[in-house]
Amino acid sequence: MNIEDMHFGRSWEGTRLEDECPCPKAPCGLVTGVLQSGCPEHDPMAAKTMRQGHSAADCPGRDE
Image 1 (cartoon, one colour):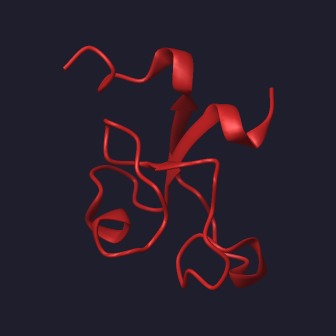
Image 2 (tube, helix red, strand yellow; image 1 turned 135 degrees about the vertical axis):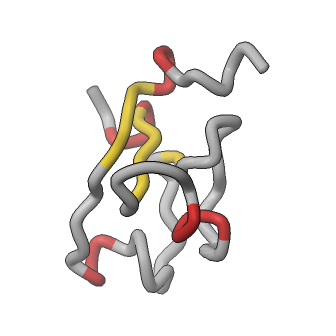
Image 3 (cartoon, helix red, strand yellow; image 1 turned 60 degrees about the vertical axis):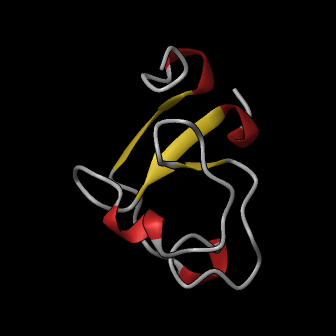
């Protein structure tokens, strides 16, 4: 599976941190695997942990 096929977030639940970042969002509110360079939360160079995620195919927001 490629990172582009994932949705992920930094909080254990909810999307508080994702709501304020410039990264593209999935319908569930998590960021997609297409990250924005320089994002303080999701840029791989920020070296922060991702605490939740799912595949795009399993996105709970896709049926909304």
